[in-house]
Amino acid sequence: MGSALAFAGSVFGLEIKVFMVRSSYDQKPYQRVLMETYGATVVPSPSQDTKYGQYVLDDKPDHTGSLGIAISEAIEDTVTHPGTKYSLGSVFDFVLLHQTVIGQEALEQMAMAGEEPDMLIGCAGGESNFAGLTFPFIGRALRGGPKPRVIAVEPEAAPSLTRGAYRYDFGDTAQMTPLVKMYTLGHSFIPEPIHAGGLRDHGMSPLVSMLKEQGHIEAQAAQQGAAFEAGVRFARSVGILPAPEPNHAIKVAIDQAMEARAEGRSRVILFNLCGHGHFDLSAYERYLAGTPEDYEYPAEKVAEALDALKALPVA
Image (cartoon, rainbow, N blue to C red; front, side, top):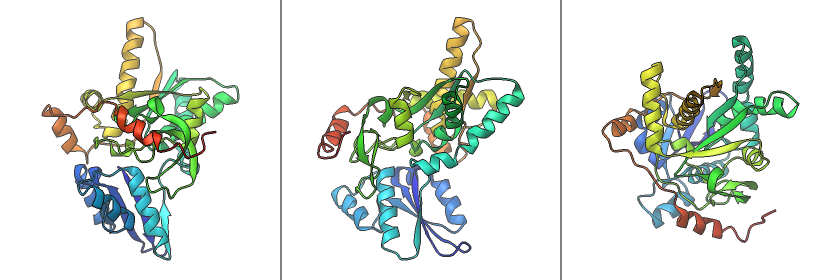
């Protein structure tokens, strides 16, 4: 979805405030309406509600936002309001490990089906769904079990795993988080406003980044148009409309299936369909109308953002 969450109050009757990335706020209005229906206050990030949001808007009033900015605003809102707690839904180790219930269930389901996956594929941006599916399989492989090929698929507009640097960086743009070692495009880099808002992050999680650096996983990047093409094909074949984020995984899963067919051999492919697209129909409308935006790798902007990291530790 592309948001950061801060909440205050007791366990029941929570006062919930969501900093929703501006591009997602505009492109996914029904997600906002659903949260508001349940009582949440949703503000577009960058917002006027925080000093950092005001700073960003003063520099660029039409800023499309990013996950890094939303995280910065949620942290500031939390520390300036006593009794408020901050809920982080992706990137950091405890979130990824919590999500491994997905992969643990997948292990059991594959065993029930009498199959063993040759490859695992998941979209990667916040990494929680990718790690949730793949970590139990990777852990089993590290303990001497079967070793499937594992592919993380990211957007070409924010290709941190495929084109970023593996080094220390901040997890947010205001530099409030601890320094973590990860594949990053630079915390000041702002990805283009693709519809897959949950993948618009400047950096990958430390755990996923380490696995990539050590060669346990590989990464590919997909353009937005190709991802939507795969999502429409999947919907017309299976009857399920995917969200823009898992469309990236579906695109590579189809590529791998077609490659196996061309080679005349079978291949068991397991991918994670981590969300439906019922709240993303405006994005599908643009794709079906022939107006999807593809963004080329912003080499100059990334180089500028990485250059700003020279003062930070590398090793």
